[in-house]
Amino acid sequence: MKEKPLLLSSAPLIYAYMLYFLFSSAFVDIEFSVDMENKALQLVCLSVLNMLLLLTVDSLDNGLALRPPMGWMAWERFRCNTNCTEDPTNCISERLIMQMCDKMVTDGLRDAGYTYISIDDCWSERERDPVSGRLVADRKRFPSGIKALANYVHNQGMKLGIYSDMGTQTCKGYPGSEFYILTDSKTFADWGVDMLKMDCCNGGSGMEIGYETMGYFLNETGRPVLYSCSYPVCLGGKVNYKQVARTCNMWRNAVDLTDSWDRVYKVIRIYGDNSGNFLEAAGPGHWNDADELMLGDFGLSEGQQTAQMVMWAMWSAPLFISADLRHISAFARDLLLNKDLIAINQDWAGSVGHRVWQDPRVPGDDEIIEGWIKPMSNGLTAVAILNGSTYGEPVTVTKSPHQLGLRGNTSYIFFDVLNSEKYGPYNDTVPMKVRIPATSVVLFIATELQ
Image 1 (cartoon, one colour):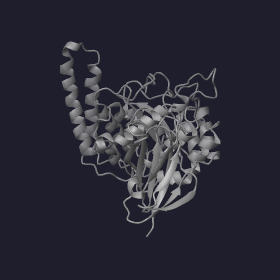
Image 2 (cartoon, helix red, strand yellow):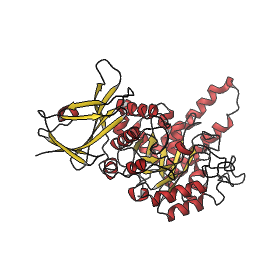
Image 3 (cartoon, one colour):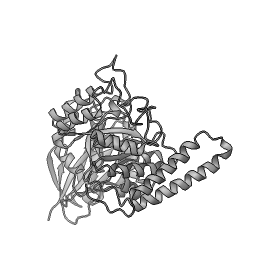
Image 4 (cartoon, helix red, strand yellow):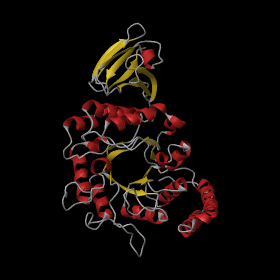
């Protein structure tokens, strides 16, 4: 990790956080009649802490996520299944994580770039260690402990992620990191954890300061830990994304995905609207996280799985699979391993695709056909056309390169990324024509002819 210039020692930062802790915990049970006074005192502590963070932390600067991170995450597919008695093969446990890790290696996912494997909520005991205050892995489901699991994952050439929350409890009621940020950062580093997903279900006031503090202390451990933050989505996107990018390697900023086209398409619309210009905040070291990939689960058709993978590639979004890799379909596996799709997502320049046009499916209809453009570092351009309509009917799109959003003055050859075929040349007099099924997508790499 690169040495960071510090204008102050970490001691004032620790004292400020301790002050916030004391005021917050002391006032937790005070009656409402004096609540405003207490909040004012908390605000003073938070302001001091924020000032010290700005002075002591130049930026995240942990040397990680120079390209969008890729891996596997437990949540969407396995949720908070802790019943290992009745469902031993699918409960959140070291056995499950080890099996997923093994499949990522044998199926070629690791070698394709999917190197993180992340535990989500429900991994710990319900209470911290009463002496040390440290988190403790569930003794029945993780009998070897997290450090041993990290060693297993590392021996497979993979990296281990873990989960916490910026509140006193996680989303499912397990111990959170509020008031234990320093302790938890050291614990995760001691265990050899490589990634932290920090959720925000019970974050409360001062959430942003808490996230910045955790980022600081993670860096101070000396261990490179990929830092995934959720607070932009919990705050409704009303954040300074440039400051978020100084704090986090990746951040959630849209709705939680479920295994359904409705949710996937909602995220696509949010990214198309780009409220708050969050797309512009992404780049090497810091990325917009559109949530997990539903490929290989139950709710999406093949066309919809393709649409999700293509759009996540166009946004340079982190690619985290959330499927049972022991039973994933060949179609989903091949899509996840598509080298051209991964190359678009991982393009070293880190450019983010933008929606450049929208057409109704038929005049006056609110079902939308839309086009996206992503400049590539090699001078080529990725072009995606999405038929988001649930009407069930394919649409034919006929557009010239200029109408698609390309700005060159000559003709273009189009390489179909999903079918490995070339078409064209296309220009103002010879437009491209393509037929797209409902809730599906086409993706091209456009090369301008000289």
